[in-house]
Amino acid sequence: MHPAIPHPAVIDAYYKDYVEKYPGILRAGWGFTVEAATQGIRLVLSGVFDTYPRLKIIIGHLGEGLPFYLWRISHGLRGDDDGKSFRDIFCEHFYVTTSGFFSDPALLCCMMEMGIDRILFSVDYPFVDNPPATKWTETLPLCTEDKEKLLSGNAKRLLRL
Amino acid sequence: MATKPYIIALEEHYFDPEVKRHTVGQEPTNAPRIVQRLDDVGELRLREMDEAGIDMQVLSHANPGLQKLDAETAVRLARGANDRLHEAVRAHPDRFAAFAAIPTPDPEAAADELERTVTRLGFKGALVNGLTNGRFLDDKRFWPIFERAQALDVPLYMHPAIPHPAVVEAYYKDYVEQYPSLLRAAWGFTVETATQGLRLVLSGVFDTYPRLKIILGHMGEGLPFYLWRISMGLARDGRGGRSFRDIFCEHFYITTSGFFSDPALLCCMMEMGIDRILFSVDYPFVDNPPGTKWTETLPLCAEDKEKLLNGNAKRLLKI
Image (cartoon, rainbow over all chains, first blue to last red; front, side):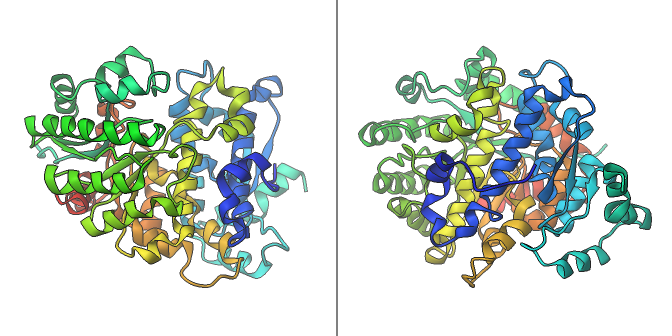
């Protein structure tokens, strides 16, 4: 599930005032993130994973931040949900990639919340150049096995390459 | 036996009876258990602080507060509400401190009320609940409030409220009936308040008021996680100047309210440093004991835990 220019009503309410000076606010700067994360949450709430229990979803840009929020979203929904927690559904069906988000703290947060098996390297080429991305992976504080998973192993398995 | 740490919590809400009368239909909850605690700034609240080991609460008015009222009503209610809050603090000055409810629908009056409460009543700053009649606080008309906050050297706590109706319609409406919390703590609050934080950075308000301090609850509504990507995404606009990251990390503080997560906290520590992170609960929407219990097992050294639990708050709020 990849972002696109957000819903016009949301642009009008949230971003319009800054679009001229900061066009990135509609896209990678913020607008993409909010809408794509909202799409991820809605998928979980929709019950689609009850109906299709082997369905797999990939979200880029380190899951648009959803792994960071797992505790708060799950805690917020407790009482509204009547089965599996948001956290469980998310961690059983979603994979995230590192596209356009070469951040150690964010990656480590995702690893703690989801496990390395569900995190895949990506760049977001050509919106992002390749060299910064691969250079970033050289200094990641990961063991060799985990780095192999991140860089190729998880993708080979998920996409049957 | 280890001594119990001194714990300050600073996103702890209550409801003023007069403000409540004027915001009927906009209550944050009808759950009797929570309403009972919002109405109490005395015995019940203190008992529940004691049970969890919370030494001090900095009290603030729960959403929607004064932010969705007409200007005249907001101004009229503010003074009485803050005076009554002052009485509650005076009854237990070693247990309570206060953030003012400021009438943002009248920005000049809001700045004046901030000054009155800080200089005359000993308040520690102000807490603003979401949009002011549909407007984000970075709008230029609200800048007198930031000027005054800088002059007084007090922080402003940007807190959520029910999101803008157009966003509810576009993003959340389909799920509100089955998942009402989607509008609030589960997601709607987060998106709008993070957007408020981001807009403040873009507005240039920190260039104009370089000593301005802003507090965001709920682990900074996630902004610390996104720092790399937001900075990258906005840098592409080629504007030069300070990065989003630098401005955010120089002016924002975050609290742990309603978000007792080790991975999220550690991410925030890596991005912002422990000096800018403060413990809070979000009482009574969140119970005290899970909050303090969480802090007992945090993978922090003793010094950092002290900073989180009281040291940063003492410094920031001059307690």
